Each structure stands twice: as structure tokens, then as C-alpha cells.
Length: 68
Image (cartoon, rainbow, N blue to C red; front, side, top):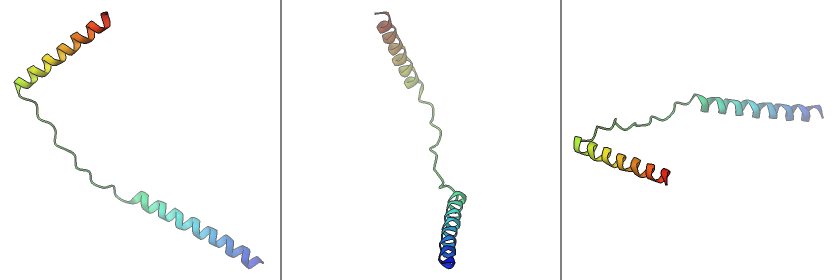
């Protein structure tokens, strides 16, 4: 009876040790290298002006909605 009890205890301890080793090995693995896109370039001056105009119109429209 004592042998069965000890076998059960050792089986549980072996399982816990294996589980902790598995968790430890996954924590130590190196992360995958992620490619980062290059920094965006500034749009040409004409596009910048057009964007500024659209943003100004959007702000004006938002102000009209708030005052209504």
C-alpha cells in the first residue's frame, strides 16, 4: 500500500516538474522577428495643401453642427 502511495506522489511530482520545465522553456524562447515598415515620406506640397484644406472644411462643418 505504501508503494502505491509513493508511486502516485512521485508521478504527480514528475508531472509538476515536467510542466514547470515546459513553461520555463517557452518563456526563454526568442520572439519572432517582426519586420517594421519604413517611416512614411512626407506628401508633396500640393497634397499637403489639399489635406489642410479638407481638414479646415471638416473643422468648419463640425463647428456648424455644434452651433446648431
